[in-house]
Image (tube, rainbow, N blue to C red):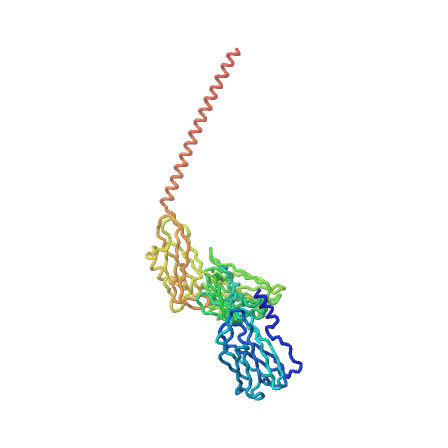
Length: 561
């Protein structure tokens, strides 16, 4: 009921302009504007300023202002003014007196000189009263402000205030609680998500203009508070903000809001942020076609990706399209005539809507995120792809000790200052293979494209990277190669990095294989012997049956004779 009354009073008083009382038809001035500040407050002691503007069409200056206090609820604390101040626009020396009449519950301000110190037409006057106490109950309070000009003509207006002791409402709409949010990639280093927060004050109906919210802030985890008040969506009690470059994983987002009276409220919940980036592996070699200017990667066993980029619109229709990848380590390509680090990997033609698609084998390059673009002239469609490490161990199944060929790509590329990084070779998270292969590991390094290489190779003789796999018990073993680079290229810059990649080798014991084979042969021989015995018994039974049949026939003949 109280909220309904509040709403009706607001409608009557109007938020932006004040309702006007019955005015004398012979008024020589008009009050164009009158408001009391703060409009919203939490009650009690308060400094209030009544801002009054004499209308530009007025003929006379205002020299007297009477302010009558609002009615209060029974049992509440009444207003008690203790200090006063007046300032007149464009007249800093204006002098006014103030008289408080406790019985009438009013304060009268009067200019010392009616003309020299009054409020001229089209000018503001600010009348401030410091109240040591006042009502504290939530309600709408209507003041009566009467002005008098030098011709002794009057004008009355009714500005209002709201005592608000209720916390504002605040809710995080996006991201939702315990939701998974997909970031939007702009380039390899920048991505964002939107957050939406609803905030409004209970002291006014939700649809009221401004909703009496003075500030809305958010923060993620233990970061700094961010003021998003400027992100208010027109016509709604909702605020939006773009959050950039969050780390993937779980986060806590907190929102808080203040109303005009200084009350505040907050809420928080967790969400998970992720980047939906296609991931690819690359083969160990790349070729360059000088006639077409295109670069092609390779597919070897289980590493290497035939990638397809597809878009629905945005480019010039029916136009030649170049598919390019920005590869910072491809300095040799950039040194070609009219080339740059945007490496051409495919060509196609856009359709009538400006869309299209093209496939290519991803070039050999270090691990990290890369930008692919489909380009027609100055129009681009871009997509982000992440290269991840890949490994092939051959042979994947061995009997006893064996030499294993290890082909690994998508690692960090060593810088020129540290060509030979620290490389570890682990078996089931132990260093059991490290000692026997230590001299081999000292020769291993990653080349400029992040491919595992060996210093044993020469320009005339390519040498594969390999290691000795010692005889172990039968089983499947996880083989991990760890590469610790002093610096490596990660797609967006050089940085300290450590990369692990793993594959599996199955070891079968030769003795067990032989014993299993002998056991199978023995069982097969026994089965054959058993089958032969059964056949002999069946033949003997048949012979006996035949003899019995012959005997029976002879007996029958004798009886007949």
